[in-house]
Image 1 (cartoon, rainbow over the protein chains, first blue to last red):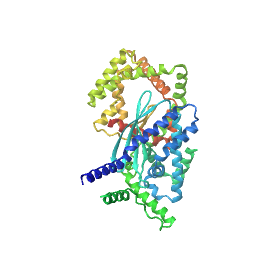
Image 2 (cartoon, rainbow over the protein chains, first blue to last red; image 1 turned 120 degrees about the horizontal axis):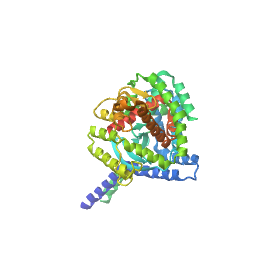
Image 3 (cartoon, rainbow over the protein chains, first blue to last red; image 1 turned 60 degrees about the horizontal axis):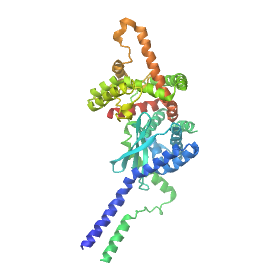
Image 4 (cartoon, helix red, strand yellow; image 1 turned 45 degrees about the vertical axis):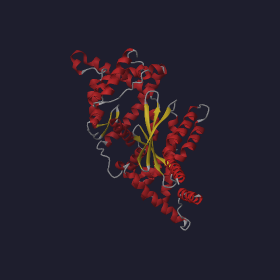
Length: 194
Length: 265
């Protein structure tokens, strides 16, 4: 019987470990991803186009683009038709990627340090990282949520020195939609993507 | 015994298998709608996080003026400051520009010191003092930053706007200042005490002697500071600007969010 209890305890331990590893993985998975991207960026022989292609390949699985599109429109999202939602999602994802590609021009030889993860809520985790620049360091926070669809932890917002990317888009869109129609917003977004 | 273990194994495997919803009976079209609805509800969970942007309108009484001033500043930056800065960086090598930037930051020590003290951040004030002493001497009047590179003493930037924020003064409406860019009522007024603490300021008290030359020398020093700073950050503003769908609210929001963060720290 004692043996049985031992086995039970062992099984329990494995089970607990298996449960928590998902969350703990966030820091390690992000570290491997960020390190991969950093070495890629430091390689001067690869073209910018190839670089961004590979970067998106590593980061796309962790970014929840559909949710981000929904979040930026806030309450307005529900008023849209199915087609409008689809179109906006596509354009906004393209916009996010475009602005990321633009940022690559500014890269010199900064490094990123992963600091810690903080569980803010049951389904929210913040990953604190620091970009080590030449003069100053910048805090970058990746915000994860537990996706209901596939139970994975995915990024829904990035905060750079206190500035939430989602929040800035949200306010701009809200401002535009106050006076203009959704079609105008789509047009403005389209101009920015191309 | 073996049976019991087998039972446990079975229980665990069942437990570990994710429960899959039975969608098969529902036709495709319905599925899309159901999914969309659950996504919509899901969004509500996030509304607490981004609440202030919805519902409540941003109080922005100067938005008309702010918009045109943003346009003016943008024009000045792109067409005047930026070309001057790029010409300057052509003749001045980067290490020299870094050094000049460091010297300015070193001279601004009293602003940081006083505001750290006012916010009761005594350890930071002490570290700042140490930095000033080391960098002014071993760092050749602040040209180099040995306090950071050798001793790992970090600067602690604090200004009077942050001090007021620390004591609970709200930002007030957003104001775009000519040349200086985004600000708010609190931070704009806070520039006055910081200006007086700034050693490169020609003190108003001196005025019976030589106003114009004092004023112009202050302006000249300021210009060197801004051109030097712009030369070290070339292309950054243009890059950031590309992200904006509407420039004024974009810059306003970045500024206000950044200030909240700076005051929190």
